[in-house]
Length: 166
Image (cartoon, rainbow, N blue to C red; front, side):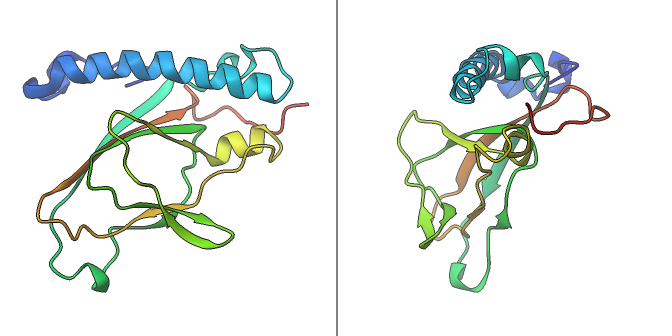
């Protein structure tokens, strides 16, 4: 979705309008979140946005079909997202888990709510004031497909070097 926006013809016709609208909302929400996180670091509200962390957006649709033996497999292995932030909209089925000091906990779906993950880049930039979230997705035991949409907020250029802010 960025830094060069997708052309409408590159998006399936059945969801072109929705994807374009969702991208605008992601930018709006991402800007608010980065402003709050920046202030939480004692920096000016615009500091994290000025780093271009909203420019390199990648939108991914996840579709996990029914798994007849979910205890024998993993939906998505444990990982942390490499970018700055991830905005996730999950359906009512769930399956997302986050690792805590007490083990894995379920992130229960809440209708209309977004899950926000701190990524590795924001952990580095914040000098570990913010921690990236180790998470995974369990195989789908439900008889209906599990669907989610994630937007990864990354720098607009991959060549730029980042380190802890002063």
